Image (cartoon, rainbow, N blue to C red; front, top):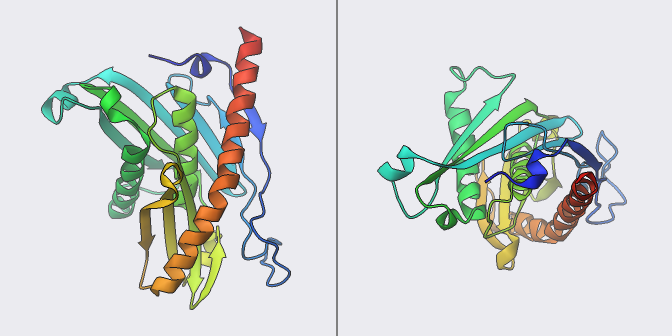
Length: 251
Protein backbone atom coordinates (compact mmCIF):
# COMPACT_ATOMS: atom_id res chain seq x y z
CA UNK A 1 0.00 0.00 0.00
CA UNK A 2 1.37 3.38 -1.01
CA UNK A 3 1.53 5.94 1.78
CA UNK A 4 -0.16 9.31 1.42
CA UNK A 5 3.16 11.07 1.86
CA UNK A 6 4.78 9.21 -1.03
CA UNK A 7 1.97 10.33 -3.35
CA UNK A 8 2.53 14.00 -2.60
CA UNK A 9 4.69 16.52 -4.36
CA UNK A 10 8.35 16.52 -3.35
CA UNK A 11 9.13 18.82 -0.46
CA UNK A 12 12.57 19.98 0.65
CA UNK A 13 13.49 20.46 4.29
CA UNK A 14 16.97 21.63 5.27
CA UNK A 15 18.66 20.62 8.50
CA UNK A 16 22.01 22.01 9.57
CA UNK A 17 25.08 20.52 11.22
CA UNK A 18 24.73 19.29 14.78
CA UNK A 19 28.04 19.70 16.65
CA UNK A 20 28.60 16.84 19.03
CA UNK A 21 31.55 18.25 20.98
CA UNK A 22 33.32 21.59 21.18
CA UNK A 23 36.65 21.25 19.42
CA UNK A 24 38.98 24.19 20.00
CA UNK A 25 41.84 22.90 17.89
CA UNK A 26 42.81 20.65 15.01
CA UNK A 27 40.47 22.25 12.49
CA UNK A 28 40.16 20.39 9.20
CA UNK A 29 40.36 21.80 5.68
CA UNK A 30 36.60 22.38 5.57
CA UNK A 31 36.67 24.24 8.90
CA UNK A 32 35.28 21.44 11.04
CA UNK A 33 36.79 20.14 14.23
CA UNK A 34 37.51 16.41 14.54
CA UNK A 35 34.18 15.86 16.32
CA UNK A 36 31.95 17.68 13.84
CA UNK A 37 29.81 16.24 11.06
CA UNK A 38 28.90 17.94 7.82
CA UNK A 39 25.48 19.57 7.46
CA UNK A 40 22.63 17.24 6.48
CA UNK A 41 19.92 18.16 3.96
CA UNK A 42 16.99 15.90 3.05
CA UNK A 43 14.46 16.00 0.22
CA UNK A 44 11.30 13.89 0.39
CA UNK A 45 9.57 11.89 -2.34
CA UNK A 46 12.10 12.44 -5.12
CA UNK A 47 11.24 9.20 -6.98
CA UNK A 48 7.66 9.38 -8.20
CA UNK A 49 6.97 5.65 -8.62
CA UNK A 50 8.44 4.66 -5.23
CA UNK A 51 6.45 3.89 -2.08
CA UNK A 52 8.82 6.24 -0.29
CA UNK A 53 12.06 7.97 -1.25
CA UNK A 54 14.55 10.45 0.14
CA UNK A 55 17.55 12.34 -1.16
CA UNK A 56 20.37 13.06 1.26
CA UNK A 57 22.82 15.86 0.59
CA UNK A 58 25.74 16.10 2.97
CA UNK A 59 28.16 18.58 1.42
CA UNK A 60 29.57 16.62 -1.57
CA UNK A 61 27.76 13.39 -0.68
CA UNK A 62 24.51 13.00 -2.65
CA UNK A 63 22.52 9.78 -2.22
CA UNK A 64 18.96 8.85 -3.21
CA UNK A 65 17.20 5.93 -1.52
CA UNK A 66 13.90 4.63 -2.88
CA UNK A 67 11.64 1.91 -1.46
CA UNK A 68 9.31 -0.05 -3.74
CA UNK A 69 6.61 -2.35 -2.40
CA UNK A 70 5.71 -4.42 -0.56
CA UNK A 71 4.28 -6.42 -3.45
CA UNK A 72 3.36 -10.11 -3.67
CA UNK A 73 6.38 -11.98 -4.93
CA UNK A 74 7.26 -15.40 -6.32
CA UNK A 75 10.73 -14.91 -4.85
CA UNK A 76 9.23 -14.78 -1.35
CA UNK A 77 7.43 -18.07 -2.04
CA UNK A 78 10.74 -19.68 -2.99
CA UNK A 79 12.66 -18.43 0.04
CA UNK A 80 10.68 -17.83 3.23
CA UNK A 81 6.94 -17.38 3.27
CA UNK A 82 6.53 -15.88 6.75
CA UNK A 83 8.21 -12.54 5.98
CA UNK A 84 9.15 -10.17 3.20
CA UNK A 85 12.00 -10.81 0.81
CA UNK A 86 14.33 -7.80 0.61
CA UNK A 87 16.12 -6.92 -2.59
CA UNK A 88 18.85 -4.26 -2.29
CA UNK A 89 20.69 -2.80 -5.25
CA UNK A 90 23.19 0.05 -5.36
CA UNK A 91 23.73 2.15 -8.45
CA UNK A 92 26.81 4.33 -8.39
CA UNK A 93 26.68 6.74 -11.29
CA UNK A 94 30.45 7.25 -11.50
CA UNK A 95 31.42 3.59 -11.16
CA UNK A 96 31.20 0.84 -13.76
CA UNK A 97 29.67 -2.16 -11.99
CA UNK A 98 31.65 -4.60 -14.11
CA UNK A 99 34.93 -3.16 -12.81
CA UNK A 100 33.74 -2.63 -9.22
CA UNK A 101 31.49 -5.64 -8.64
CA UNK A 102 33.11 -6.74 -5.36
CA UNK A 103 33.05 -3.23 -3.89
CA UNK A 104 29.37 -2.71 -4.74
CA UNK A 105 28.37 -6.19 -3.60
CA UNK A 106 30.03 -5.63 -0.21
CA UNK A 107 28.20 -2.31 0.11
CA UNK A 108 24.91 -3.98 -0.81
CA UNK A 109 25.47 -6.73 1.76
CA UNK A 110 26.06 -4.20 4.55
CA UNK A 111 23.01 -2.20 3.46
CA UNK A 112 20.91 -5.36 3.38
CA UNK A 113 21.99 -6.20 6.93
CA UNK A 114 20.85 -2.77 8.11
CA UNK A 115 17.58 -3.00 6.16
CA UNK A 116 16.79 -6.33 7.81
CA UNK A 117 17.41 -4.72 11.19
CA UNK A 118 15.16 -1.74 10.39
CA UNK A 119 12.17 -3.33 8.61
CA UNK A 120 9.61 -5.49 10.41
CA UNK A 121 9.60 -8.01 7.57
CA UNK A 122 7.18 -10.37 9.35
CA UNK A 123 4.44 -7.81 8.72
CA UNK A 124 4.68 -8.59 5.00
CA UNK A 125 4.58 -12.36 4.37
CA UNK A 126 4.90 -13.58 0.77
CA UNK A 127 5.97 -10.09 -0.28
CA UNK A 128 9.00 -8.38 -1.76
CA UNK A 129 10.38 -4.98 -0.78
CA UNK A 130 12.84 -3.56 -3.27
CA UNK A 131 15.39 -0.97 -2.16
CA UNK A 132 17.35 1.02 -4.71
CA UNK A 133 20.25 3.22 -3.63
CA UNK A 134 21.61 5.69 -6.18
CA UNK A 135 24.95 7.27 -5.39
CA UNK A 136 25.14 10.50 -7.36
CA UNK A 137 28.32 11.71 -5.72
CA UNK A 138 30.58 10.52 -2.91
CA UNK A 139 33.10 12.39 -0.78
CA UNK A 140 33.84 10.00 2.08
CA UNK A 141 31.64 8.44 4.80
CA UNK A 142 29.46 6.98 2.04
CA UNK A 143 28.01 4.06 4.01
CA UNK A 144 26.62 6.26 6.77
CA UNK A 145 25.05 8.54 4.12
CA UNK A 146 23.41 5.52 2.48
CA UNK A 147 21.89 4.29 5.73
CA UNK A 148 20.60 7.75 6.70
CA UNK A 149 18.96 8.15 3.28
CA UNK A 150 17.46 4.65 3.43
CA UNK A 151 16.08 5.12 6.92
CA UNK A 152 14.39 8.36 5.87
CA UNK A 153 12.91 6.72 2.74
CA UNK A 154 11.53 3.87 4.86
CA UNK A 155 9.91 6.28 7.30
CA UNK A 156 8.32 8.19 4.42
CA UNK A 157 7.06 4.94 2.87
CA UNK A 158 4.98 4.00 5.91
CA UNK A 159 6.53 0.52 6.02
CA UNK A 160 6.52 -0.96 9.53
CA UNK A 161 9.88 -0.56 11.24
CA UNK A 162 11.20 -2.39 14.27
CA UNK A 163 14.37 -0.39 14.93
CA UNK A 164 15.92 3.03 14.50
CA UNK A 165 19.56 2.89 13.47
CA UNK A 166 22.30 5.47 13.82
CA UNK A 167 25.29 5.19 11.42
CA UNK A 168 28.56 7.05 11.67
CA UNK A 169 31.84 6.78 9.76
CA UNK A 170 35.34 7.44 11.05
CA UNK A 171 38.92 7.78 9.84
CA UNK A 172 41.43 6.40 12.33
CA UNK A 173 45.16 7.07 12.55
CA UNK A 174 46.70 5.58 15.67
CA UNK A 175 44.51 6.66 18.55
CA UNK A 176 43.18 9.73 16.70
CA UNK A 177 39.56 9.44 15.53
CA UNK A 178 37.99 11.79 12.97
CA UNK A 179 34.20 11.82 12.62
CA UNK A 180 32.46 11.85 9.23
CA UNK A 181 35.68 12.05 7.17
CA UNK A 182 35.90 13.31 3.62
CA UNK A 183 37.37 11.10 0.89
CA UNK A 184 40.69 12.94 1.24
CA UNK A 185 40.72 12.32 5.01
CA UNK A 186 40.01 8.61 4.44
CA UNK A 187 42.90 8.21 1.99
CA UNK A 188 45.62 6.03 3.51
CA UNK A 189 43.85 5.76 6.87
CA UNK A 190 41.86 2.97 8.50
CA UNK A 191 38.16 3.57 7.93
CA UNK A 192 35.55 2.42 10.43
CA UNK A 193 31.78 2.24 9.94
CA UNK A 194 29.64 1.88 13.06
CA UNK A 195 25.87 1.38 13.09
CA UNK A 196 24.03 1.21 16.40
CA UNK A 197 20.45 0.24 17.15
CA UNK A 198 19.18 3.27 19.03
CA UNK A 199 15.97 1.36 19.81
CA UNK A 200 17.94 -1.08 21.97
CA UNK A 201 20.01 1.32 24.08
CA UNK A 202 22.83 1.60 21.59
CA UNK A 203 23.46 -2.06 20.80
CA UNK A 204 25.93 -2.42 17.92
CA UNK A 205 24.47 -3.63 14.61
CA UNK A 206 27.55 -3.20 12.42
CA UNK A 207 31.16 -2.37 13.19
CA UNK A 208 33.41 -2.74 10.14
CA UNK A 209 36.97 -1.56 9.64
CA UNK A 210 39.28 -1.65 6.64
CA UNK A 211 42.27 -2.81 8.72
CA UNK A 212 43.14 -3.68 12.30
CA UNK A 213 42.08 -1.19 14.95
CA UNK A 214 42.76 -1.43 18.68
CA UNK A 215 39.68 -2.35 20.72
CA UNK A 216 39.94 0.86 22.74
CA UNK A 217 39.72 2.90 19.52
CA UNK A 218 36.71 0.90 18.30
CA UNK A 219 35.08 1.50 21.66
CA UNK A 220 35.69 5.23 21.22
CA UNK A 221 33.99 5.10 17.80
CA UNK A 222 31.01 3.26 19.26
CA UNK A 223 30.68 5.74 22.13
CA UNK A 224 30.78 8.68 19.71
CA UNK A 225 28.11 7.04 17.56
CA UNK A 226 25.86 6.54 20.59
CA UNK A 227 26.35 10.20 21.52
CA UNK A 228 25.55 11.29 17.96
CA UNK A 229 22.37 9.17 17.76
CA UNK A 230 20.21 11.69 19.63
CA UNK A 231 21.12 14.49 17.23
CA UNK A 232 20.41 12.31 14.18
CA UNK A 233 17.04 11.26 15.60
CA UNK A 234 16.20 14.93 16.17
CA UNK A 235 17.08 15.83 12.55
CA UNK A 236 14.96 12.97 11.19
CA UNK A 237 12.01 13.67 13.50
CA UNK A 238 11.95 17.35 12.53
CA UNK A 239 12.05 16.47 8.84
CA UNK A 240 9.23 13.91 9.10
CA UNK A 241 7.04 16.26 11.15
CA UNK A 242 7.49 19.11 8.68
CA UNK A 243 6.83 16.83 5.71
CA UNK A 244 3.64 15.52 7.35
CA UNK A 245 2.45 19.08 8.00
CA UNK A 246 3.06 20.04 4.36
CA UNK A 247 1.17 16.96 3.13
CA UNK A 248 -1.74 17.68 5.50
CA UNK A 249 -2.05 21.24 4.13
CA UNK A 250 -2.23 19.85 0.58
CA UNK A 251 -5.18 17.55 1.37
